[in-house]
Length: 420
Image 1 (cartoon, rainbow, N blue to C red):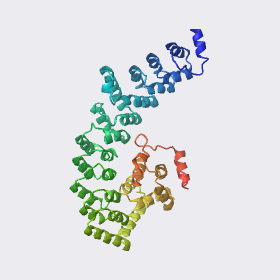
Image 2 (image 1 turned 60 degrees about the horizontal axis):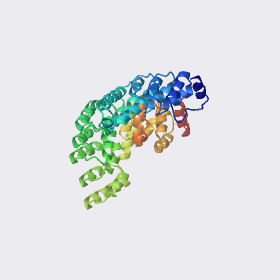
Image 3 (image 1 turned 135 degrees about the horizontal axis):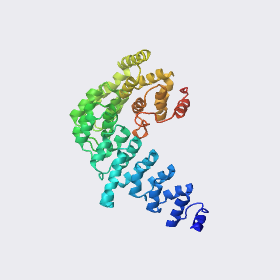
Image 4 (image 1 turned 180 degrees about the vertical axis):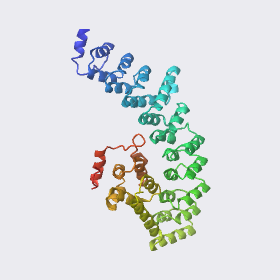
């Protein structure tokens, strides 16, 4: 054995063909580098990986958690590991076993895997739960109770994947969730589903959750009944954020096009006018509307009044998270720009440059300097129509995901003084 250990510790790495004796030698000599390598080897003996699941070194336990050869007994130990990185790696690996597990795993092992997934889905750390949700979002090989628990999670980063993709959530489940959930973004995730029944569409429409309705309108898979569309058009008159998705909605009736044309901006009128299949009456009405906008409408007076109210709120110390979020949800970009300009003490032109750049990191940094919450920063990003996949999301549901030096670097890039 001494000769074996001496031979082993002259190696720079483990041999390509790993024997049981090699593995035992690593455990007995406690070489840190060797244990790290052994923990990641797929050919490591199960009992060795079980032993390493309680290793004092964090990176060894992380490697064991990620190793597909790690036995279920070791995985059950790692589920209680105090370090979040270990549980995150475990959640990623174990959750990937679930799709098709009923065909590949024996009943007793399947039960233990499902129990472990359920435990990780209830982990105290949102990032662990979010990994489980992402990995099982589209499978039906998991008990519905796990998916429903994730769907009702207080963190949208956890709930969103299953709300958008899970086949285990019925329209009735989703309508109930919209009625009961207070989590921002839940209805929006549901509106992006590939299949959304007519009653569910109406429920989302009547909620008048602006991001959710926007997602509904741009979802090409969704069929919207004429009466539901009429409701949306009526309520969208004073909500600028809905004008563009309404005008871009395919297969609009002539009646719907004429109603939308009565309140949208000239650029959207021109988009409507470029549609194929317009009847002569609708074409004439659209051209008349375009000329009215060119000659000048009363929109300028309305905008001026709103801008004045923003300045008044700032002077009264009432330009806060709710008021800025309201401007963002309503799509009032000019007013939103002025609000951020007043709060950070920088010219509107600089803020407008950042908004036009549509950089999620930069606009988040501006909101941070303005003293606003990360949730308000998220609403601001959505108002700029930044792609959902590019949005900078809150850390643990509430906190800014970037640290102060990174925020100030973003501000400096656009010539804005850093936050002290």
